[in-house]
Length: 611
Ligand code: SF4
Image (cartoon, rainbow, N blue to C red; front, side, top):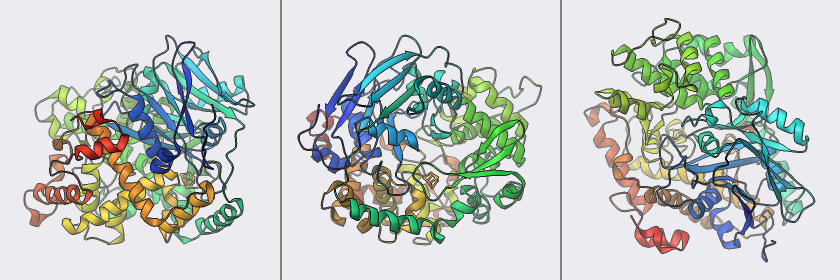
């Protein structure tokens, strides 16, 4: 199947894979859809909406899981080797998408498709191999993966490549995904599509891994212009705007956030961690840093690998892992944090949700709501890094306190009952990332209205707080346009896809993004069109949530974060005023719902209008 009108940068088709002999099918994608949703989280949402029936059980066989590529993948533009994974998330029951990087993105695009959609459930563990090498239509084979079941994702990836050949690239799940832990990750080359439990969706299908290879290269509409833009972008990616990421990595955020009272500690009961200095990047780096690394096709190289006794490959550490497994649990021992982070990687657990859930259980234990004894005899208490490591090791087997841990904080709180839901720090079921909303009011709004739950990446509203574009401690209607602008920009970056760490180097964002898209695809893309595209992608993501049963009450923050009086900071009144203004500026109803006509127009099918 070759589409009649294929813009450069695309293959104009996606591959649907399901169990059974007729399970693989190519589906054409119209030029207009590609231009309207671009790729990544935008195109992934569009494919998901087509392939998933409304109200689906996220872990049921009918649920679809989409690997979505983008027009820029395979181009010389720095940081563009990325893919999105999109599904209905098991933690939230709402749209979930996560980005991951590197050679898998390049190889998947060379298969000759713009997305791969996995549906159904296989009877036993399989590794799906999608082969586009020398074929017009990719071949799909389901290999028995019994011998890979139980292995960490990285080891499964290594063994599968050894078996299939090193021209294959692999995304895989770890034991947490196999066990359908609702915050399990999908991994490739040590990077993770981390948030929201996409690994559990793949595990529910008994798919251990997806392997891809191919030789379909999409032509560039204007190769000279693309090369010029790529050279310029690479040069700027080595400038001051990305220096922090290159020199110290995202862990450098820790002390900065602490100074701003924005570092969540002890299950968000505080925004400052007195022992933060022990975890500071400047001290971690000289004592423990093993290497710096980067995703494929990236000139920045933000990955910092730290030494951990007995682990040859070391541990990749990001700010979010450091905050969640450290201060959020009251832990200041760098060794314990590194071990916990390594354990999350080996099991295939999202570090933010893992740390958030453990911090919630520590709170519940200190309140006397649960039996707090661990098998070692330790009691679960804030500040005990060994307890964090021990509890993590119980989660995948759902053993002892691990049975609570395996539920995520919202569900665990519901099971514990009483006042426990009051201290479960999540939005829509997804645990909060490392930005304390009390000190960052633009971020507070971004987290409350986020499609996939408490989400910093799709919102990026922290930029508004940190840049001073709005008073970070006095959020109000004036804050809202800045939050919308940040969210719209993130929708474009995540659909094009370019790494967010590049954003500081893009001084005229829309003009530059339009120039890149034009050079690759041949479309004449102006700034106005990109604004409209961003809004459409955000509308589509909300429309999917609306279809899945979203209610107005979900757009909020946990009560612990809100004070009584607006004069004292982030109150419910203040937050609600921002949310109302946000809905109005988005053109949604006062109840936060898309107008029915807009729902229909998004997919061109009337059943989307139904509440
Ligand atoms: S900046 Fe970091 S996360 Fe972004 S593409 Fe480069 S190495 Fe990957």
